[in-house]
Image 1 (cartoon, rainbow, N blue to C red):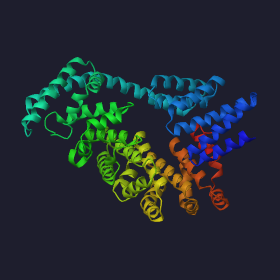
Image 2 (image 1 turned 180 degrees about the vertical axis):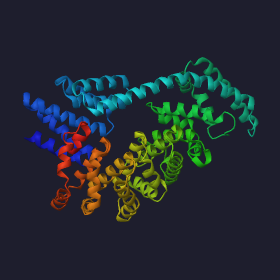
Image 3 (image 1 turned 45 degrees about the vertical axis):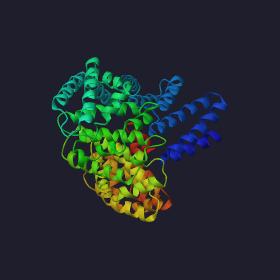
Image 4 (image 1 turned 30 degrees about the vertical axis):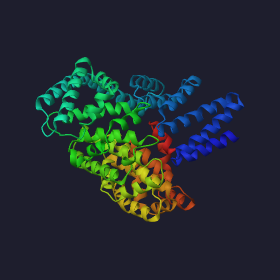
Length: 491
């Protein structure tokens, strides 16, 4: 009975998207069930384990989600949900071929499962992209060799004699490493091992953009990103970079190059995710750099199907903002309030309407960060004044499916965080009718619509309004939907 109670508590927390608390409840349930023994307890433990995997995926703890799903598959190889969630974990870990195999197994068990078809198609696309990048890796070494040649011939206009001598020495050493490396990764690894050369190249980071300097910045920033993933990475990078060196490359106005700023922001994000991030990066000025980048990319991506450099910068900027707001202390709250007053708010909502899943996901993460960290009534009022009208407008209009799904999910998050707001939303019959109409839309929109209805169910009064609006019948239909995520949301 205690195990069942813990599981139900976990289900309730998961429904509210409080995945940390849900995971703790599921952990308790699994521990109690393993102590009981018996077939029935093992079967229930497998179900709870899948609930754990769902939370672990939401928390981006993909290795643990993989282990959790694998244990269920060992116990019950015919569990479609276990194969699906393990495929998701493998896909996030970049183990695409293994993910593809799991999606295929899922299709054998559930031939009509739409999410398996979509997942397998996405893995195939990413595998093809990896092959293209491997081919480009060799080409990029040749390009780097050409860049070094251009820089050496160009001389050091504007540099002092001593500085130019150091610059020439660094470029000669880089040429040697480029000749020795067969791929881009080879050259990067050799640069990491040659710290003196890497430090000399770092001094060029904030230099002129003439000739091949911009591509050289890409090379150095890519190496620093690779180094940041290692245990000693942050300390090593702090020693390599001069004070303010990175800050000068983070401004889209000064650089004017999306690819360069995207790499710099990705590096800043890595540094800010560490226990002791550089103090100069966790300041209000960083919020304005992020907002400027989001606004620039949002404007640039309007009406375009794909723009990889703009997309990379948008993702890096939003990632950095989420990292800046962690841990959720007084500084984080000040940074969020500062963000509310920038044009990054409008850009966040425009980026949420993009079809690219990476951009959608990051914009929602920014939105959730704001919701979680707004403290006082003034900040909350400012936030709601800026986000509620466009969210409602997207739901009530014929916006793109991606924009509608994000707006529904955002409203659900707001309703879960504020019961009074949830009750207020149920008073709009037009909004409820629009939400119910979305049950005939795409799978992503159907999931978000069901989650919003769930979030609006905060008491007897709101339940009565939902039933009066006719919410029960479409939810029952969604419970038999072909897509697993839709069925779960409806349940």
